[in-house]
Amino acid sequence: MSATASSPAAPAGPLHGVRVLDLTTVFMGPSATQLMGDLGADVIKIEAPGGDSTRSIGPCGDLGLGPLFMGLNRNKRSVVLDLKQPEGVQALLRLARDADVFATNVRPAAMRRLGLGYEQLAEVNPRLIYASMVGFSQRGPYGAKAAFDDMIQAATGLAAAVGEAAGGEPRYLPITIADRSVGLYAFGVISAALYAREQTGRGQSIEIPMFETMIPYILGDHLYGHTFVPEKGGFGYPRLMTPHRRPYKTKDGYVCCLIYTDRHWQVFLDAIGKGELWRTDPRFKTIRARTQAIGELYQLVSDELAQRTTAEWRALLPESDIPIFPMHTFASLLEDEHLAATGFFQKTEHPAVGTVLETAVPSEWSGTPPGPRTPVPLLGQHTAEVLREAGYSPAEIDALMAAGAARGAKQENPT
Image 1 (tube, rainbow, N blue to C red):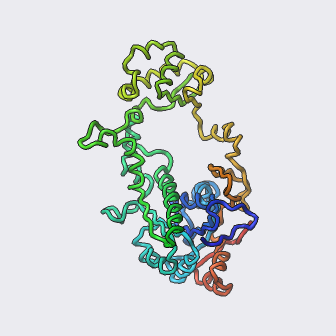
Image 2: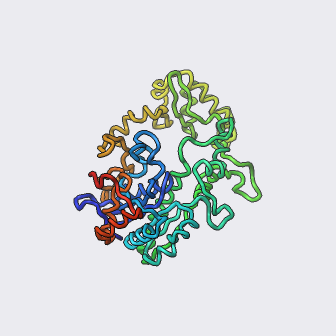
Image 3: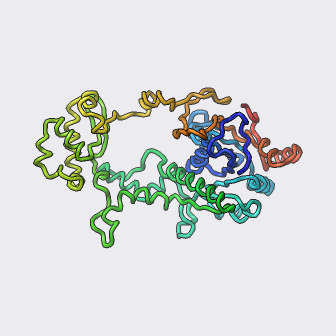
Protein backbone atom coordinates (compact mmCIF):
# COMPACT_ATOMS: atom_id res chain seq x y z
CA MET A 1 0.00 0.00 0.00
CA SER A 2 1.14 3.55 -0.61
CA ALA A 3 1.71 6.18 2.04
CA THR A 4 -0.94 8.88 2.34
CA ALA A 5 -0.59 12.53 3.12
CA SER A 6 -3.02 12.45 6.05
CA SER A 7 -2.05 13.94 9.37
CA PRO A 8 0.04 11.67 11.63
CA ALA A 9 -2.42 12.40 14.43
CA ALA A 10 -5.43 11.25 12.45
CA PRO A 11 -6.94 7.86 13.35
CA ALA A 12 -6.12 5.25 10.74
CA GLY A 13 -9.27 4.23 8.90
CA PRO A 14 -9.59 0.73 7.45
CA LEU A 15 -8.27 1.89 4.05
CA HIS A 16 -5.46 3.99 5.47
CA GLY A 17 -2.40 3.59 3.25
CA VAL A 18 -4.39 3.09 0.03
CA ARG A 19 -3.85 5.76 -2.61
CA VAL A 20 -6.57 6.19 -5.25
CA LEU A 21 -6.25 8.14 -8.49
CA ASP A 22 -9.82 9.19 -9.17
CA LEU A 23 -10.45 10.07 -12.82
CA THR A 24 -14.24 9.99 -12.44
CA THR A 25 -16.95 12.62 -12.72
CA VAL A 26 -20.63 13.24 -11.99
CA PHE A 27 -22.20 10.59 -9.67
CA MET A 28 -21.25 6.94 -10.17
CA GLY A 29 -17.47 7.08 -9.91
CA PRO A 30 -17.26 9.85 -7.31
CA SER A 31 -19.68 7.96 -5.04
CA ALA A 32 -17.37 4.91 -5.13
CA THR A 33 -14.23 6.89 -4.46
CA GLN A 34 -15.80 8.98 -1.71
CA LEU A 35 -16.61 5.76 0.14
CA MET A 36 -12.94 4.87 -0.08
CA GLY A 37 -11.96 8.33 1.14
CA ASP A 38 -14.45 8.13 4.01
CA LEU A 39 -12.75 4.94 5.15
CA GLY A 40 -9.26 6.38 5.12
CA ALA A 41 -7.91 6.15 1.56
CA ASP A 42 -5.94 9.04 0.08
CA VAL A 43 -8.14 9.92 -2.91
CA ILE A 44 -6.59 12.19 -5.52
CA LYS A 45 -9.29 13.56 -7.79
CA ILE A 46 -7.88 14.22 -11.25
CA GLU A 47 -9.94 16.94 -12.94
CA ALA A 48 -9.89 18.57 -16.35
CA PRO A 49 -9.24 22.32 -16.40
CA GLY A 50 -12.99 22.95 -16.37
CA GLY A 51 -13.52 20.64 -13.39
CA ASP A 52 -16.20 18.08 -12.66
CA SER A 53 -19.46 19.30 -14.24
CA THR A 54 -21.35 18.91 -10.94
CA ARG A 55 -19.20 21.65 -9.40
CA SER A 56 -21.34 24.31 -11.09
CA ILE A 57 -24.82 22.91 -10.35
CA GLY A 58 -26.96 24.60 -7.69
CA PRO A 59 -26.12 27.06 -4.89
CA CYS A 60 -22.42 27.98 -4.68
CA GLY A 61 -21.93 26.62 -8.19
CA ASP A 62 -20.23 29.88 -9.06
CA LEU A 63 -17.50 28.87 -6.60
CA GLY A 64 -17.26 25.37 -8.07
CA LEU A 65 -18.74 23.94 -4.87
CA GLY A 66 -22.36 23.15 -5.72
CA PRO A 67 -24.35 20.81 -3.42
CA LEU A 68 -24.17 17.76 -5.69
CA PHE A 69 -20.39 18.04 -5.88
CA MET A 70 -20.17 18.69 -2.13
CA GLY A 71 -22.09 15.49 -1.43
CA LEU A 72 -19.72 13.24 -3.40
CA ASN A 73 -16.22 14.64 -3.07
CA ARG A 74 -15.21 15.05 0.55
CA ASN A 75 -11.97 13.45 1.72
CA LYS A 76 -10.36 14.03 -1.67
CA ARG A 77 -7.53 16.15 -3.02
CA SER A 78 -8.07 17.96 -6.33
CA VAL A 79 -5.39 17.95 -9.03
CA VAL A 80 -6.00 19.61 -12.38
CA LEU A 81 -4.27 18.04 -15.39
CA ASP A 82 -5.01 18.68 -19.04
CA LEU A 83 -4.88 15.16 -20.47
CA LYS A 84 -5.12 16.54 -23.99
CA GLN A 85 -1.52 17.63 -23.57
CA PRO A 86 1.30 15.05 -23.52
CA GLU A 87 2.76 16.65 -20.40
CA GLY A 88 -0.53 16.16 -18.59
CA VAL A 89 -0.62 12.48 -19.55
CA GLN A 90 2.99 12.04 -18.43
CA ALA A 91 2.18 13.64 -15.10
CA LEU A 92 -0.70 11.21 -14.57
CA LEU A 93 1.51 8.25 -15.44
CA ARG A 94 4.02 9.52 -12.92
CA LEU A 95 1.34 9.73 -10.23
CA ALA A 96 0.28 6.17 -11.11
CA ARG A 97 3.66 4.78 -10.05
CA ASP A 98 2.74 5.14 -6.39
CA ALA A 99 -1.00 4.53 -6.64
CA ASP A 100 -2.91 1.46 -5.52
CA VAL A 101 -6.12 2.12 -7.46
CA PHE A 102 -6.88 3.96 -10.69
CA ALA A 103 -10.63 4.58 -11.06
CA THR A 104 -12.16 6.00 -14.22
CA ASN A 105 -15.54 6.34 -15.89
CA VAL A 106 -14.10 7.60 -19.16
CA ARG A 107 -14.93 5.21 -21.98
CA PRO A 108 -12.13 2.66 -22.53
CA ALA A 109 -11.52 3.58 -26.16
CA ALA A 110 -10.90 7.20 -25.16
CA MET A 111 -8.55 6.11 -22.38
CA ARG A 112 -6.52 4.02 -24.83
CA ARG A 113 -6.31 6.96 -27.24
CA LEU A 114 -4.90 9.06 -24.42
CA GLY A 115 -2.31 6.40 -23.67
CA LEU A 116 -3.98 5.67 -20.33
CA GLY A 117 -5.42 2.20 -20.89
CA TYR A 118 -4.75 -0.61 -18.44
CA GLU A 119 -1.75 -1.88 -20.38
CA GLN A 120 -0.05 1.51 -20.32
CA LEU A 121 -0.61 2.05 -16.59
CA ALA A 122 0.33 -1.54 -15.72
CA GLU A 123 3.71 -0.93 -17.37
CA VAL A 124 4.53 1.76 -14.84
CA ASN A 125 2.84 -0.03 -11.91
CA PRO A 126 2.08 -3.77 -12.19
CA ARG A 127 0.40 -3.73 -8.76
CA LEU A 128 -2.20 -1.19 -9.83
CA ILE A 129 -5.92 -1.99 -9.60
CA TYR A 130 -7.42 -0.40 -12.73
CA ALA A 131 -11.18 0.01 -12.21
CA SER A 132 -13.13 1.06 -15.28
CA MET A 133 -16.76 2.02 -14.65
CA VAL A 134 -18.63 1.84 -17.95
CA GLY A 135 -22.19 1.92 -19.22
CA PHE A 136 -22.21 -1.52 -20.81
CA SER A 137 -19.93 -4.54 -20.95
CA GLN A 138 -17.25 -4.02 -23.55
CA ARG A 139 -17.89 -7.53 -24.88
CA GLY A 140 -21.33 -6.66 -26.27
CA PRO A 141 -22.70 -4.49 -29.10
CA TYR A 142 -23.57 -1.67 -26.66
CA GLY A 143 -19.99 -1.45 -25.44
CA ALA A 144 -19.14 1.88 -27.07
CA LYS A 145 -22.30 3.64 -25.89
CA ALA A 146 -22.25 6.35 -23.27
CA ALA A 147 -24.65 5.82 -20.37
CA PHE A 148 -26.39 8.00 -17.83
CA ASP A 149 -28.61 7.14 -14.91
CA ASP A 150 -31.85 7.86 -16.79
CA MET A 151 -30.75 5.67 -19.69
CA ILE A 152 -29.94 2.75 -17.40
CA GLN A 153 -33.23 3.09 -15.51
CA ALA A 154 -35.02 2.81 -18.85
CA ALA A 155 -32.77 0.11 -20.34
CA THR A 156 -33.08 -2.24 -17.35
CA GLY A 157 -36.88 -2.11 -17.18
CA LEU A 158 -36.90 -0.08 -13.97
CA ALA A 159 -38.74 2.92 -15.44
CA ALA A 160 -41.41 0.63 -16.91
CA ALA A 161 -41.82 -1.19 -13.60
CA VAL A 162 -42.16 2.06 -11.64
CA GLY A 163 -44.88 3.23 -14.02
CA GLU A 164 -46.72 -0.08 -13.90
CA ALA A 165 -46.59 -0.27 -10.11
CA ALA A 166 -47.90 3.30 -9.83
CA GLY A 167 -50.68 2.62 -12.33
CA GLY A 168 -49.45 5.25 -14.78
CA GLU A 169 -46.88 6.14 -17.39
CA PRO A 170 -43.27 4.91 -17.14
CA ARG A 171 -41.14 7.20 -15.03
CA TYR A 172 -37.71 7.46 -13.48
CA LEU A 173 -37.08 7.29 -9.76
CA PRO A 174 -36.23 10.81 -8.54
CA ILE A 175 -32.78 9.76 -7.35
CA THR A 176 -29.75 8.66 -9.34
CA ILE A 177 -30.35 5.08 -8.22
CA ALA A 178 -28.30 3.43 -10.98
CA ASP A 179 -25.29 5.72 -10.55
CA ARG A 180 -25.22 5.38 -6.78
CA SER A 181 -25.98 1.65 -6.69
CA VAL A 182 -23.25 0.87 -9.22
CA GLY A 183 -20.89 3.18 -7.32
CA LEU A 184 -21.54 1.19 -4.15
CA TYR A 185 -20.95 -2.07 -6.04
CA ALA A 186 -17.75 -0.65 -7.55
CA PHE A 187 -16.51 0.24 -4.07
CA GLY A 188 -16.97 -3.39 -2.99
CA VAL A 189 -15.34 -4.76 -6.12
CA ILE A 190 -12.31 -2.47 -5.81
CA SER A 191 -11.90 -3.37 -2.14
CA ALA A 192 -12.05 -7.07 -3.03
CA ALA A 193 -9.44 -6.55 -5.76
CA LEU A 194 -7.13 -4.91 -3.21
CA TYR A 195 -7.52 -7.97 -1.00
CA ALA A 196 -6.77 -10.26 -3.94
CA ARG A 197 -3.65 -8.25 -4.67
CA GLU A 198 -2.47 -8.80 -1.11
CA GLN A 199 -2.71 -12.55 -1.80
CA THR A 200 -1.15 -12.58 -5.27
CA GLY A 201 1.06 -9.49 -5.34
CA ARG A 202 -0.40 -8.54 -8.72
CA GLY A 203 -2.77 -5.84 -9.82
CA GLN A 204 -5.48 -6.32 -12.43
CA SER A 205 -8.02 -4.62 -14.64
CA ILE A 206 -11.66 -4.57 -13.49
CA GLU A 207 -14.68 -3.55 -15.57
CA ILE A 208 -17.86 -2.51 -13.76
CA PRO A 209 -20.75 -2.00 -16.24
CA MET A 210 -23.87 -0.11 -15.13
CA PHE A 211 -26.32 -2.06 -17.30
CA GLU A 212 -25.24 -5.52 -16.21
CA THR A 213 -24.82 -4.47 -12.56
CA MET A 214 -28.35 -3.10 -12.27
CA ILE A 215 -30.15 -6.01 -13.96
CA PRO A 216 -29.72 -8.44 -11.00
CA TYR A 217 -31.02 -5.71 -8.66
CA ILE A 218 -34.22 -5.53 -10.67
CA LEU A 219 -34.73 -9.06 -11.95
CA GLY A 220 -33.81 -10.46 -8.53
CA ASP A 221 -37.32 -9.38 -7.52
CA HIS A 222 -39.08 -9.43 -10.85
CA LEU A 223 -37.84 -12.36 -12.95
CA TYR A 224 -40.33 -14.27 -10.79
CA GLY A 225 -42.08 -17.00 -12.83
CA HIS A 226 -39.43 -16.74 -15.54
CA THR A 227 -36.87 -17.98 -13.03
CA PHE A 228 -37.88 -21.44 -14.24
CA VAL A 229 -37.53 -22.95 -17.70
CA PRO A 230 -40.15 -23.30 -19.01
CA GLU A 231 -41.59 -20.34 -17.10
CA LYS A 232 -44.07 -20.97 -14.29
CA GLY A 233 -45.81 -17.61 -14.39
CA GLY A 234 -45.26 -14.04 -15.43
CA PHE A 235 -42.79 -11.33 -14.52
CA GLY A 236 -43.07 -9.21 -11.39
CA TYR A 237 -43.24 -9.97 -7.66
CA PRO A 238 -46.92 -9.13 -6.99
CA ARG A 239 -46.35 -7.53 -3.59
CA LEU A 240 -43.99 -4.97 -5.13
CA MET A 241 -46.00 -4.39 -8.30
CA THR A 242 -49.44 -3.63 -6.86
CA PRO A 243 -50.38 0.07 -7.03
CA HIS A 244 -51.64 -0.33 -3.44
CA ARG A 245 -48.08 -0.70 -2.13
CA ARG A 246 -47.47 2.84 -1.01
CA PRO A 247 -47.43 4.89 2.20
CA TYR A 248 -50.88 4.73 3.78
CA LYS A 249 -52.84 7.91 4.43
CA THR A 250 -54.01 8.43 7.99
CA LYS A 251 -56.26 11.19 9.30
CA ASP A 252 -53.28 13.51 9.72
CA GLY A 253 -50.42 12.20 7.62
CA TYR A 254 -48.90 9.09 6.08
CA VAL A 255 -47.29 5.97 7.52
CA CYS A 256 -45.44 2.92 6.38
CA CYS A 257 -47.21 -0.04 7.93
CA LEU A 258 -45.76 -3.34 6.73
CA ILE A 259 -48.10 -6.22 7.48
CA TYR A 260 -46.30 -9.27 6.15
CA THR A 261 -46.03 -12.36 8.37
CA ASP A 262 -48.78 -14.57 9.76
CA ARG A 263 -48.36 -12.88 13.15
CA HIS A 264 -48.59 -9.41 11.60
CA TRP A 265 -51.92 -10.20 9.97
CA GLN A 266 -53.37 -11.78 13.12
CA VAL A 267 -52.42 -8.76 15.22
CA PHE A 268 -53.71 -6.28 12.65
CA LEU A 269 -57.02 -8.00 12.07
CA ASP A 270 -57.60 -8.32 15.83
CA ALA A 271 -56.75 -4.63 16.28
CA ILE A 272 -59.39 -3.52 13.78
CA GLY A 273 -62.02 -5.90 15.15
CA LYS A 274 -61.95 -8.29 12.21
CA GLY A 275 -60.12 -11.21 13.76
CA GLU A 276 -62.59 -13.67 12.30
CA LEU A 277 -61.16 -13.04 8.84
CA TRP A 278 -57.93 -14.76 9.92
CA ARG A 279 -59.92 -17.89 10.67
CA THR A 280 -62.40 -17.82 7.80
CA ASP A 281 -60.98 -15.97 4.80
CA PRO A 282 -58.62 -18.13 2.67
CA ARG A 283 -56.83 -15.03 1.36
CA PHE A 284 -55.08 -14.67 4.74
CA LYS A 285 -54.12 -18.27 5.41
CA THR A 286 -50.62 -18.47 3.89
CA ILE A 287 -48.06 -16.07 2.51
CA ARG A 288 -48.61 -17.66 -0.90
CA ALA A 289 -52.34 -16.90 -0.74
CA ARG A 290 -51.72 -13.39 0.55
CA THR A 291 -49.26 -12.68 -2.26
CA GLN A 292 -51.82 -13.72 -4.86
CA ALA A 293 -54.45 -11.41 -3.32
CA ILE A 294 -52.08 -8.67 -2.20
CA GLY A 295 -53.83 -5.81 -4.00
CA GLU A 296 -57.12 -6.53 -2.23
CA LEU A 297 -55.45 -6.94 1.15
CA TYR A 298 -53.45 -3.74 0.85
CA GLN A 299 -56.66 -1.91 -0.12
CA LEU A 300 -58.25 -3.20 3.08
CA VAL A 301 -55.29 -1.89 5.08
CA SER A 302 -55.48 1.47 3.28
CA ASP A 303 -59.20 1.84 4.05
CA GLU A 304 -58.67 1.06 7.73
CA LEU A 305 -55.64 3.29 8.30
CA ALA A 306 -57.45 6.30 6.85
CA GLN A 307 -59.87 6.21 9.80
CA ARG A 308 -57.39 7.12 12.60
CA THR A 309 -54.46 9.42 13.21
CA THR A 310 -50.84 8.41 12.91
CA ALA A 311 -50.40 8.58 16.69
CA GLU A 312 -53.45 6.39 17.26
CA TRP A 313 -52.14 3.73 14.91
CA ARG A 314 -48.69 3.80 16.49
CA ALA A 315 -50.28 3.25 19.88
CA LEU A 316 -52.70 0.59 18.68
CA LEU A 317 -50.26 -1.52 16.67
CA PRO A 318 -47.41 -2.80 18.85
CA GLU A 319 -44.20 -2.06 16.96
CA SER A 320 -42.67 -5.30 18.21
CA ASP A 321 -45.18 -7.11 16.03
CA ILE A 322 -45.95 -4.74 13.15
CA PRO A 323 -43.37 -2.35 11.69
CA ILE A 324 -45.01 1.08 11.52
CA PHE A 325 -43.24 4.36 10.88
CA PRO A 326 -44.39 7.86 9.96
CA MET A 327 -43.49 8.95 6.45
CA HIS A 328 -40.71 11.54 6.38
CA THR A 329 -40.26 14.37 3.93
CA PHE A 330 -36.79 15.72 3.18
CA ALA A 331 -37.44 18.51 5.67
CA SER A 332 -38.74 16.32 8.50
CA LEU A 333 -35.89 13.86 8.00
CA LEU A 334 -33.48 16.53 9.22
CA GLU A 335 -35.42 16.64 12.50
CA ASP A 336 -35.54 12.88 13.09
CA GLU A 337 -34.93 12.05 16.76
CA HIS A 338 -32.93 8.89 16.05
CA LEU A 339 -30.56 10.63 13.66
CA ALA A 340 -30.18 13.47 16.15
CA ALA A 341 -29.26 10.99 18.90
CA THR A 342 -26.63 9.28 16.73
CA GLY A 343 -25.19 12.56 15.45
CA PHE A 344 -25.81 11.55 11.87
CA PHE A 345 -26.14 15.08 10.51
CA GLN A 346 -23.05 17.13 11.19
CA LYS A 347 -22.30 20.79 10.62
CA THR A 348 -18.75 21.49 9.51
CA GLU A 349 -16.91 24.59 8.40
CA HIS A 350 -15.69 24.87 4.83
CA PRO A 351 -13.09 27.59 4.23
CA ALA A 352 -14.73 28.75 0.99
CA VAL A 353 -18.48 28.46 1.63
CA GLY A 354 -18.85 28.56 5.42
CA THR A 355 -21.03 26.15 7.39
CA VAL A 356 -22.20 23.06 5.54
CA LEU A 357 -24.44 20.16 6.55
CA GLU A 358 -23.02 16.69 5.97
CA THR A 359 -24.02 13.13 6.70
CA ALA A 360 -21.81 10.94 8.85
CA VAL A 361 -20.07 7.78 7.68
CA PRO A 362 -22.89 5.31 8.49
CA SER A 363 -20.75 2.33 9.53
CA GLU A 364 -19.18 2.09 12.99
CA TRP A 365 -15.81 0.46 13.67
CA SER A 366 -14.36 -0.73 16.97
CA GLY A 367 -10.76 -0.98 15.81
CA THR A 368 -10.11 1.08 12.67
CA PRO A 369 -12.62 3.95 12.68
CA PRO A 370 -12.69 6.37 9.76
CA GLY A 371 -10.56 9.43 10.39
CA PRO A 372 -11.52 13.12 10.39
CA ARG A 373 -12.94 14.42 7.13
CA THR A 374 -11.19 16.94 4.98
CA PRO A 375 -13.28 19.61 3.24
CA VAL A 376 -14.41 19.20 -0.33
CA PRO A 377 -11.52 20.60 -2.39
CA LEU A 378 -11.45 23.66 -4.56
CA LEU A 379 -10.65 22.94 -8.19
CA GLY A 380 -6.91 22.31 -8.42
CA GLN A 381 -6.39 22.99 -4.73
CA HIS A 382 -3.79 20.25 -4.31
CA THR A 383 -2.13 20.19 -7.73
CA ALA A 384 1.28 21.48 -6.61
CA GLU A 385 1.20 19.45 -3.39
CA VAL A 386 0.54 16.14 -5.14
CA LEU A 387 3.04 16.82 -7.92
CA ARG A 388 5.70 17.52 -5.28
CA GLU A 389 4.91 14.17 -3.67
CA ALA A 390 5.42 12.54 -7.08
CA GLY A 391 8.93 13.99 -7.28
CA TYR A 392 8.38 17.07 -9.42
CA SER A 393 10.67 19.97 -8.62
CA PRO A 394 9.26 23.47 -8.10
CA ALA A 395 10.67 24.48 -11.49
CA GLU A 396 9.01 21.50 -13.20
CA ILE A 397 5.70 22.30 -11.55
CA ASP A 398 5.95 25.92 -12.67
CA ALA A 399 6.67 24.73 -16.22
CA LEU A 400 3.60 22.46 -16.23
CA MET A 401 1.45 25.31 -14.93
CA ALA A 402 2.84 27.75 -17.49
CA ALA A 403 2.14 25.32 -20.33
CA GLY A 404 -1.44 24.76 -19.12
CA ALA A 405 -0.81 21.02 -18.62
CA ALA A 406 -1.55 21.47 -14.91
CA ARG A 407 -3.39 24.09 -12.93
CA GLY A 408 -3.66 25.08 -9.31
CA ALA A 409 -6.36 26.87 -7.38
CA LYS A 410 -6.27 30.55 -6.58
CA GLN A 411 -5.85 29.50 -2.97
CA GLU A 412 -3.78 26.36 -2.45
CA ASN A 413 -4.53 24.41 0.72
CA PRO A 414 -6.84 26.91 2.47
CA THR A 415 -7.01 24.55 5.41
